[in-house]
Length: 183
View 1 (cartoon, rainbow, N blue to C red):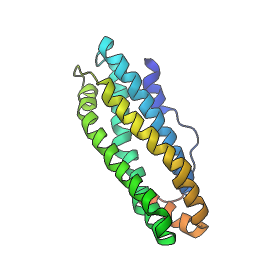
View 2: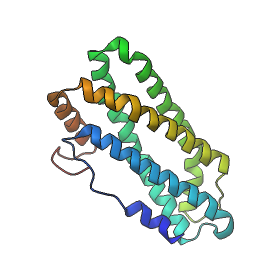
View 3: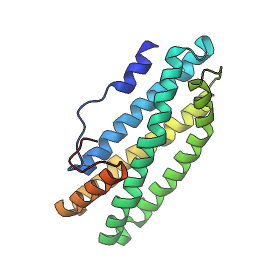
């Protein structure tokens, strides 16, 4: 399991705030890697407990889903969704409502897993129910697939360079950095 902790550090060059839609897609890849780490952690725990690797993996997963994933949803709901609604309210209403509802369901799944991961990170013996891990992964897989197939192409077609620049600046502010800093 020594690769679990290293997976958290492996990240390829990500798009910057000048490419906010690219950042959203890159975040999807990081979410998928975190979920893969979560699945490996779930399988690791029954035999090894909250060993060093498990604690490191749990801390990384917590850090990611408590910060970056929250920012990701805020980027969509606070910056992308309102602009798409403004440009094409009828065409986007159902999609955006569905994706916002997904965000609520994903947050609910996370609230169930978070205390268990916190216990693992603290060194307590804890197991993760395979069903809980699978439900989170399935929910994110479906959500990401819909965003990649529908939201990002729609935003690419509808949002001009100026709108994307403003969105990139808003994303940077959410993270407390300047728009020229790497994500």
